[in-house]
Amino acid sequence: MSMNGYWYGPYAYASYEPYVPAVQDQHEERMEIVLRLIQEAIEDERHDELFYDYLLGVAPTEQEKQVITSIRDDERKHRSWFRQIYTQLTGQRPSISGREETFQKPASYLEGIEKALMGELKAFEKYRVIYKYIPVQFRDTIFEIMTDEMKHASYYNWLYAKNK
Image (cartoon, rainbow, N blue to C red):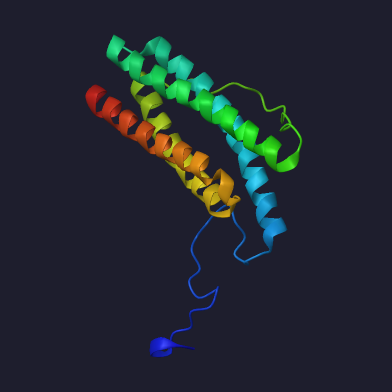
């Protein structure tokens, strides 16, 4: 116990992190989590790229197409960076899961924008866990990816409001 009778040990404040076990584990287990999440991120970024290609095809204005194109291009960049980080951490190329690279076509453009917005926010949550546990030399790259995801969410929010 310390100040005011509260204990400030490593388990004092359990936060909800859906990707990380509640127990504070050693470096090796944290790296396993990071590598698993990076592998998922590589697949997710590819799925997003395909989904955004679909949105480009149904976007009603040239301005909206330009916004979605810039987001799609960022997703390609993120995927490449995650692949590089994975290779640097493991000495191996990330494996392909065999998960089919398709997506479920939304009922409308607006529904697709909403799905994209929620996907960007979920990606940010996942990448925040990666940032927390990845070796420090990779944090600037992960931070840039995270801020891009927030920028994308803002753009999709704008697109949603514009088309509502």
